[in-house]
Image (cartoon, rainbow, N blue to C red):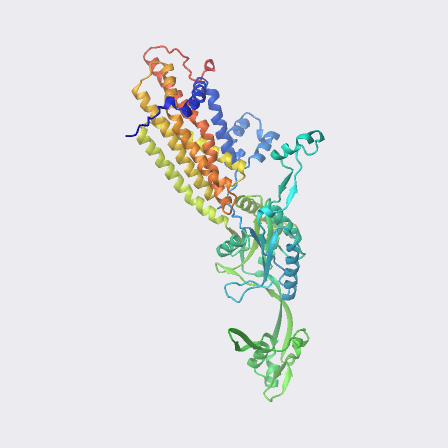
Length: 635
């Protein structure tokens, strides 16, 4: 074997430094249990207020005050707390910063190809004036593919941004900016409170939206990959939307337009756009069969002339090297450009003469649907919207409540004969449903709501089979509650929402916190089994001894977890905005684990003192300490 000597725990300098801080602190905690336990209680209350909202956590307090005849929810302080802690947002996955935007404005259905080309040209020039924009590429209509059924009114523009390090810097006034007497130390203050900051992506998006704004053009801003995934899943060109089902396109469009005005009032809802289903101009030839028979013109000949002369017919394809060009036959543009010219298209008769088509058909101008969509056997129209500065689930829930409330009020107004005052009239047989990427979150939560309780239940039984005491299982879960609360507090200060990635982080946090508790409780149980205490002082001394033996491995678990996840927060590259929310629960929970290092010994000592006093009392003995383990005399 080697000559190296294993240094005992008591001689290790790192352990000695930890003992100098931990031992007196733990003795003070054991002597002042009531004061010490208020800290984890406050942490749990704070964490659950962040998660569920202060209005939910404060239900016991508000109910008690109502019984006493006082409504505390009407006070200014209570309402301010409800606004500060409304509950953490929910989403499926944190948004991935793709470094680009996909701008999909929609023009009115009556707009021609010329108008659409002019709109995209103006918008591309305006977008290009933003300094952070590298490239702008726009597309009108659809490609030569049946998989891309985009109308001419649909525009897609990809906006690529330059690297973030080259973005503009904006001035940011600080508390010391206008203090002239601090000029001598301003350079040092700027290192802590800089007076300049880099422009954010949200501010760039707002500037792009203002630059590209054109009357009559409805904007929608997303990211390229995000948009393709949403379109494949729901058919929307936005993060979420309402599908209105019915049997008449005009009624569906009316309901959609009413919903569009209402949904603009929902906090966090942006880019609210309702489908303009009806509004596309059409030219229709109504064939007069009697006149056609009089001139000896067949219906097939009239239809062929209309198809070939106006629409054109592909005859063949010319091959020039590796290039292919279709050859089409139709009237030149100057003979079919105006409405009056279409009445003078010539139709051959049975005698060989040619007559104007107006003599055998009537040309009319009408308004019809731009596109017809159907789902579940019914026609459907969309009202799409995005959300910024707020989570998707909350926006959908608030929007649904608003629509249901407005529909109820409108039904009452219609019953009273006040149709003009109704804001949302939905005919019988028409209904709406919500769809979007938030559906992934709901499906994931449905599964997690079954899996997480099963996992926790299995933890309960495994801990019970290990310790054989239910109250030790409760102590472990109290420690887990404190750690989980620390994770929610970390999410609150980071500004992240609850997502599947965040719940994965919480699952990892629960496992690490459970291990720390088991390590501490296992040694406590072995120590109390080997050295039965003779008085309350022995109980506390044994708890302190066990804490000193297990403080270092517990600290190593916390420190290694935090250091192992630190690179995720230090690297700002692509994908970090998805990974960081996953790591926040573990980092926040392990930071609060410093408190849990005292929670388990304190609660364990509390139970053991109570058991010792009860045993001493049953044997007729007197304890040298007050019968209440948290009595004011110990303070």
